[in-house]
Amino acid sequence: MSSLCESNSSSHGNGDLVEQLASGFKIALQGAFGEAGTATDPSIKVAANPKFGDFQANFAMGLAKTLASSHGNHPKEIAQLVIDHAPQSLRDLCEPFEIAGPGFVNIRLRPTTIANALTAMDNSTLGVPNAKGLRTVAVDLCGVNVAKQMHVGHLRATIIGDTIARLYERLGWKVYRQNHLGDWGLPIAMTLAALRRAKIEIARVTLDDLNTAYRNAQAQGRDDEPGLAAARATQVGPHRIAELEAQHEGAAVALADAHDTLRRLQSGDTSVVADWQKLIDVTMCEVYETAATLGVDLKPDHNRGESFFRDRLAPTVDAFVQAKLAERDAGALVVRFADRERPLLIQKSDGTSLYATTDLAAVRYRIQDLGAERVVYCVDARQRDHFRDVFDAVRLIGWTKLPSGSDAHLVHVPFGAVLGPDKRPLKTRSGENFTLKALLDEAVARGRREVRARSAIPESPTAGMSSDELDAIGQAVGIAAIKYADLSSDVARDYVFDLDRMVSFEGDTGPYAQYAHARIAGILAKASGRDADCPIALVNAEERALALALLRYSNAVEDAAKQLAPNRLAAFIHELANTFNAFYQACPVLRGVDDATRASRLRMCDITRRVLADALSIMGIVAPNRM
Image (cartoon, rainbow, N blue to C red; front, side, top):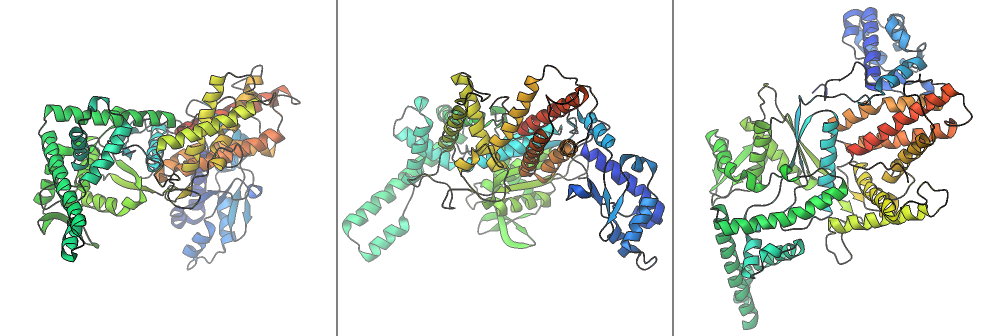
């Protein structure tokens, strides 16, 4: 895939500047070396050290190897020849070129070039290109099980998936969020049967009730037939044998009841279906509340649970059989792969389906029905092999083929675990998994304490604000702390949950980025007025650095979406906040400057504020105007 979207403007910031530089150097390469130069990538990169320039062209060494047999030019000589053939359009963009090291070409843009590019991105798009709904992606996120509370493990699937969806939405793609609920099959039937045996009024159950019923149902259906056989063989005593016999009989009764409940559910029994739907409603009520607290876009029409695919499972299996891609193995149906011994089990020997069967049906639906050219699964790293097998099976049968003739791209975004201070999966002191609600409640409480403490300082921007206003800001800070800490790390890695560090207003944190936004909002609020169309003048090094940082925004969004890496956007946010703070310290905005400089710097402040707010919104993070 060459590009994530088509540009919606003739100039969209740093990406456009790189394209202009690359185009100019391609003309120069062709003029200097003909066909060999035409085939050479100019390799335009952002300069690692600003004192050497803004960009660097690294083509000379590679081209020297290509030309070695016929020309024997030194890389520096090659670089000079290319510079000599640079078109005027390229020279107009840049200061005189410098050759460094073994032949690198240092490129420093003219201040007017940067100012013009920044002026071009100062509109509602902020320079970010837009596919205008012509491209489609399906993003699998959240994936809760009905009758169970969300735990900390659901945090990553939910916010990583939401951010990836938002990245694509920001780029103008048509995005289908897909919440793959665990709402069908024997585990749900066991819970429902246990509730009915206990004569619990299902119309009044809470999620805590369902969570308890789910655990009890699993325990009641747990058989220990090997233990009973061993007890009888070793004659451990009549009481222990009687205990195991009772457990065995109870488990058999519970399983028989669960299977009967599942049969009635699958056949559409009105009362069973109504109770089943109640379990879903109670579960999803808390899921939607949690999503709202997290700033995640998750609604009922995003739900595509296992029940949605139940009528597609038999046709899915039949399709593999008809294509001669499934074979019998001890009565079960499996799909085999040429490069691994592990087959994919798609139907048990008793004719029932598995998770893999549902996932195959889901991928087919997302490509063939929704028309997704990209299908993204945000699921923890333990499922890596599972998705490799499912995706390869889908490719074998040809379901990745789109009407255009191209193939859909299937991607699993595997994420690591959230760890406690002991570097083990985060749990409560009692050893239980943290519920996500408890985690968020603690983060919000911590954020509110921090905000209230700062509001007690007389000169604080939040001094004198109402309790409700402070609570709203505190909640935004607490949620930003958790989300940014998660999204700013490489999603594939585990990370240690440290709320003290996350809530800090210093360092690479969500509150630090929010505070940078609030500081700019405060500057703009103090300005008696500003000229939105004034010329941008870049005199100081800090002004230039801020402008170049802003021009990297479109690239940051596109790169994060292309790599499915929210941490790349987080890195941009942190760099921009740092660059603005350096600008703020070195460049007076409201006082001590002439009107033209004041107007130019206010315009840069406004662009920076809007870019920060936009970037944070892609992460689903609120950008307060006062903190």
